[in-house]
Image (cartoon, rainbow, N blue to C red; front, top):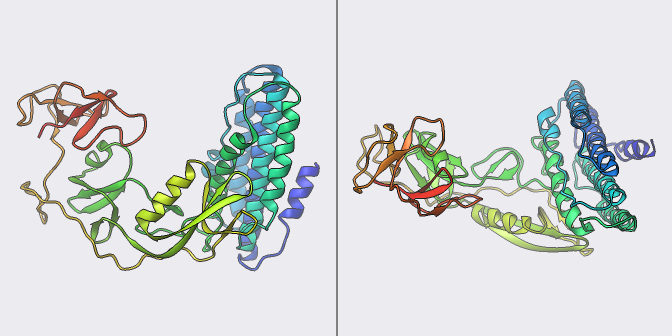
Amino acid sequence: MRTLVVLAVLLSFPVDALSDAEQRCTRAKVRAATEYVRAYYDCYADAAAAGTEPDFACLTAATDAARMLVAAANSRGPCPGTPDEVGNGVCVPFLAAGDPACRAAKFRAVGWKFSRRLACHGDGLRRGVAPRPGCFARIDTRFERRIARADALGTCGGSADQLEAIVDRCALGMATALSCGNGTLDYGEICEGGSDFCASCQIVGGACCVTAGGCFQFGGPIENCFFGGGLDIQPGFCTASGCVADIPLSATPVCCQQAGATCSEAVATSATELRAMFATCSTSGLAVIGTCGADGRCVAASNPPVALSTTTTTTATSTTAVPGTTTTIPFPVCTDLGAACGQCGTGICLPPIVGVSVGACVVPDALRLCAPSPPPCGQNEVCITGECHTLCF
């Protein structure tokens, strides 16, 4: 009960950034998200205390209740954040086997921190500014104490730094789902709205896939390009004018928040630099559009990065007759699965995606196992049943 009272106070400050209806909607969704996280983690804590696995019915009940509350909140707004985004936004760090009391206490501590960080984010969302100074710092201090008390109950995995690195990122992701599209650059967002370098308020990844009618951005293995009608892959970004190697941006400060009161900052002047900075920071911290404050914590900026004029456009060359283009199909696409193909002498048509009747013409001898993360194979290679094969043109 005390937790709900504190949350109610924290989320009740007046704000001019959103309309009254949007304030009510945002308040309701943040409250639903915080209650959902606590209930979800309680399922894990109760199971850990009993030495069992979390009860599926318990997890389902928490998720269903959150989805219902988030959907109902739209009647007061609407405001950003769908039931699926909130329901799928929760994450639970792995805790190695250990003393039940220790594991249960750590699950409750992590659930508490997750929900409290959401409340900090929610306060900023409603006011249209960054979370209040000191809000995260107070949570971090209390969380470390809770983990220390859990360790005193026995031996189990998960240090404060390890656990908070996971939960902080998840809390930021759920908060972004509740803010993206509200017209302001909120803490944790890279941009507001869609652009050639940004989607869902985050930097786009992957590469540019050239098609007969233009291009699209894609990620993952190269199959995702040519099975979507792609004719070529170009590094960079898909724009209205085609694939470009990079997109120049207004000088954009990027702050990397590390565990505790430690941060660093840099300035990105292109979309590629911005993407690289966020990727590098994400391996050990949280990236924020903003600067590093005197207290060692990121101070969010209020202005999003703006795309400047794009000058470098890449094109493909080839002999394939495609109306309106001169693009070559770089992927030896085939449909006669199992049959010989290509002009390399040993090509065979194999399906990169099981169950799909379109294949790729490849050299049958595998080169190596596919990598566990994209890109799984090298240039002019494709992953088939877990092994990289050379494409046969």
